Length: 430
Image (cartoon, rainbow, N blue to C red; front, side, top):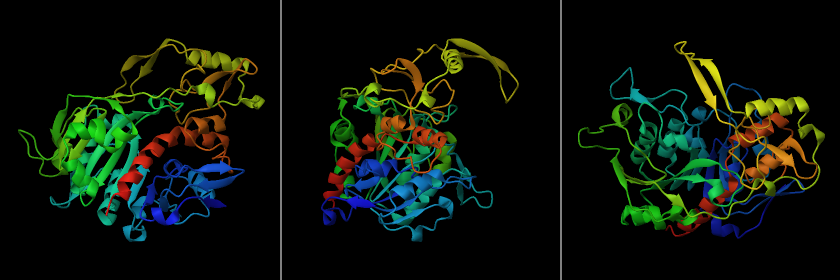
């Protein structure tokens, strides 16, 4: 059963849809969801009216099953079909669109059938977000992605993010963005992601930031400046996703063909003009990995055997391995630096990957303080690293998938801080 506790009428206009929902990280963060005795308690800060989670090429849908089970008594539909097949008329009107979308190749070209048409690279989910934005015109959007999005692809740095900014401009949005390392703001994982805040031109907030100096928005007055304070920065880089000194970006194809930029960790885009700046966080006291591990004994299966210890010792050692390029058969040396035999419990954990829990170099290895033996993290400890309630994915999901889901998830506390400021912005809207 799902329980809400708050003044419901006050939040009626804070309606949200969640795309690429996974196991519900945005919703858990936005509404401070708790799980007590397998009972979900959701603070109704925002009303989630629709969500979509679909994993292609598989009949099994564990993320959707988890989301649906945890929010089974919630308002709104949870969709489990290819987002490309969803008619926007079937999606409820909403104030905020949220989602963590994949980092892919966003290149675009003129359609082969007509020079007037534009087509994005097939299979890229960004264009589904664009389609929904054009159809529903939500006032705000909050998106999350890996930070390399700002620099991809390697042969044309900044092109992909430039395409996204141009796309959002054409949909009528201004954009604030920030690269955030969760550990810098007190969370127990060094997980770095870029967050994108879109503001529709019809909003009061858009008009406010449009008339404020860009440096002030980035340093102190914008959503991210409030949620994640930084040390004042002064040197802005400026770009334009409409034109530059030599080339008019007549359409998004031209951006795809020639645009390059060095996007920094923070930035603002209004009416196609971009300001970006490198920033240094005003750090919060770190939460060490030791704070999330069990204080009582764990199952023997998580402890390493002598054979596993040797495998991990090799994987984490300093080494050079000869590899062969799959593209041209060229042989090269792949180097890896040494890692400590186990992860320190006195500092935040490293970024979790989807391979967490397997015999892989990236898997966390800790020395259990109760028995002084090496082991991997349990699925529940991984949930804690991302700020999910204990046992959130313990709902008929295989353990391997539980690790995988946490490797894909975001840090819920980070979006909680975004949501807190966003709530005030929405309340000030007419």
